[in-house]
Amino acid sequence: MLDAALGDRQADRVVPPTGHTVWLTVLTATAMAFLAVFALALALATGRLADRWADSLAQAATIRVSAPPEQADAQVDALQAILAATPGVAESRVLDQSEQAALLEPWLGADLPLDTLPLPRLVEVIGTDDLDVEGLRQRLAAEVPGATYDDHTRWRQPLVRAADRLRALGWIALTLIAGTLAAMVTLAAQAALSANSQVIRVLRLVGARDAYVARAFTRRFTLRAAAGALIGTTLGGLAIAFLPQADPAGGFLTGLSFAGAAWLLLPLIPLFAGAVAFLATRRAALSALARFE
Image (cartoon, helix red, strand yellow):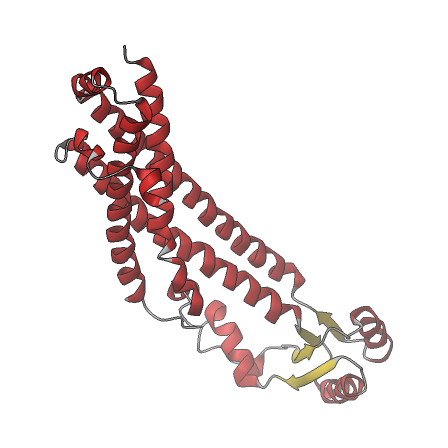
């Protein structure tokens, strides 16, 4: 079936085995495949990042207790009792002074004298899907007036939206890469057809049909593009493999990689490049042959 689609090896002798069209096709496919690896890694990594942020932050919340120093401990104890009796609260704990200092350090510096500042007490809450957030807010307002429930929605949603947009940009980049490859292969095929116009006319005189000639060009350019894409995919995969491993302290950039079965997507890039080259070359060849006398 593949030979029927691409044509036999004897037919593609009408296509010049060397020349600028060879290097144009191979180098373009190599470069586009290399970029496609990174675009695919970007799309997958940002997808994982968006899902992780959405899952982890959706269940995490902070309760801020603002009260005079002499009332703070009593209100925190009352808050802990309420949380212990609230369905849907999986875990709660009071952040100590060192943890609060670590949270404030990026903005206020490492030598911040927390004991001289009227900072609120912070309680971290991990909830489940069964947690009635609105009911908990109303109970806190009634029994612990200084407590404010913050489910991080204000800063969680922009992060998730940003990650989703980066993921969309990755897929858009893959689409543009495919379009660029198709355009360059089309130009290379048209140049080869023009350079071999005399040979094509002779083939027609001896009875060759346009479909036979088109398959010859399609076979040669499809194999060139697939070979170049294989090189580019291999280089891109090696570059991704040697990037730093995912590290929570490193943020997004250290997570730009493939995870688990996602590595199996890389062999699809040369196959996709070959398919794009096949369609682009066949269309260009049939269109050009229709214009030949």
